[in-house]
Image (tube, rainbow, N blue to C red):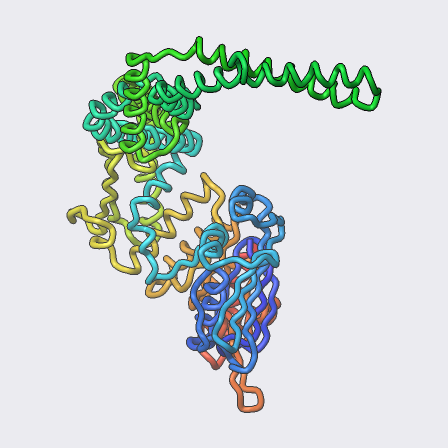
Length: 554
């Protein structure tokens, strides 16, 4: 409920602060006194766009602040989804700066107008005779039927399953698109994969093959050099080993004559051992060296294959070819498995769709069951509001389409006159009739769900005193479970409010200001008397006013 409202520097309002109670609150005032200004200020709280024309003093900022008691509104998830701190007493503030910029805050956290509009839709419903678009909207009409049918649990399940169904359908489309593209590439990818698999790739093999190729392709020159090396080591008279052996023997004898020559002898002996080992390796190389044309051809062929693969795949390393091979293997496998994946996905869809249909059917049956009751209740209320021949024709046709709120197409037709044809509400009902229909629907809804604060803005325009009495009774009854405001020109309605406010203009220092004041019992009698008899209040008008108020309070 709306607990308090503060408005500063807005239109004709300099500074206004007012607290509101639960129940039925009536607001009266002369035409042009500023009731629309009050509604304009509330609209800013609900997310309406603002401009500099809203400022009373363009050198100062405009502030509009409202406090709502939302403890029983179940809005915690909405606050959480928008990263807002939930407070049972929530404060919404709008500021319009002299620069023209606007700022909005919820519990002191800055928000954009979109968030404000979403939250505002859960807090206040402002309804005037010219604002009946909601009434002709399918979503609202379904909301009314579902409130009576108590479908909230089923609709939650339906929407969850619908979300799953849509997600799976998207995944199936992607699989089929992949399959369509993959089939085109599958043969080529399979060829590339086979080529890489047949190559029997091993990391580091290219470098090893290059080395082996160099060796095999230069075998004659290597043999020639190894032979020469062998000769230089082993030649009988001039070979390295022969000459070093002689040197070693000479130095050993020399070290026997003088100790200082011993280290040199030992070094030559060590060198001789190393040279002997080297000679052994040269001999081993000679034995191992084999001119193998077949192996040379094989190595050359593998190198050519690898180089071709490098060029084809735009890489330089065998490791990169291995990575490509593994990726191709996955692609080919996915393509080969996609049919099975499609079958599996279609089975999942069928399962979810079956559950979706089951819930949709349950929602449909519960809706059908309450349509006669809704029709009867609305027609009964409208008859009391001066529309004795009002009739509704409400039909629900099962559809192949999965809508957000079920599988039905709703036809909500109306006829205001006896023998008249049924037609869409917006075509069959006048503005005044639509207002009474909305009042009837809202009064029915209050019996089945928690509604936000509702403000009726002169929806009683053009109705008789007796009908206005009934409208007031309906609004008062609604206020048992919710907060109801009525901006009215009719004394019969004003008298039935639990609380009565008056909007008035005052000229202070040649400046016109709009104010809102809560009337006490005495002021209320005078205000209603003025509404009954005009500016000149007669004794009979006062007596009639007291009678109206006493009748309400008795």
